[in-house]
Structure formats: C-alpha cells, structure tokens
Image (cartoon, rainbow, N blue to C red):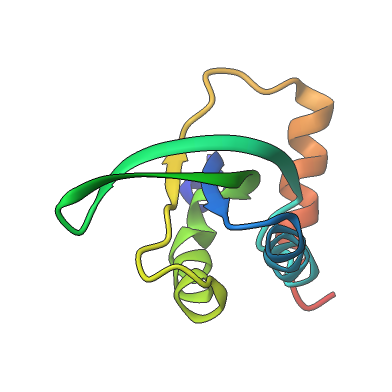
Length: 112
C-alpha cells in the first residue's frame, strides 16, 4: 500500500458554523479531504493561558489521506482563526471498501 494513501480521520474545532463551513470547503475544493462533517453544539472545556476556559464550538470530522496531513496543517495555520488550532489525526481500524475507494479517489485527483 502507498503509505501516502492511508486514510486518516482528522478532528478539529471552529468557533462557529460559518467558519467551519469555510474551512471544510477549502479542504474539499483543494481535494485535501474527501468529506468534512460539521457538528455544531460542542462544548469544549480546556486550559488556556493559565486558566480553565469553556467555549461552544463546532467539531469538524475530516476524511483525508496521511500524505496530505502536512498540507492540511499548513492550510490550517493560514486559514484557521485560532491562535492554536486543533488538528488531531487518527487511523481508522476499518473503512468499508466502497467508501474507502471513493475517499482515496476524491483526495487523489488533485489538479484534475
């Protein structure tokens, strides 16, 4: 298997649905992600600048390939409004074969 084609699910948050949609569209238009699910209404509790903070956020579930994580990270630093944007990649144990084929095809046709 081409290790750049290994599927990854990336998790990130955004401050609101509008920003989440902008980020998702940027990834999908550039074929860095096959799909991005946007889940509003997430409450995050976190430590920030010496204190405990809480925010209502939007969760992004990003379907990408391992070979694109570096470019996604660069784009995140360019477009994401947070000073320290969350971007966590996890490897799925299993992806249904037809969905996996579509996932890889949609993120492999860059420049097409």
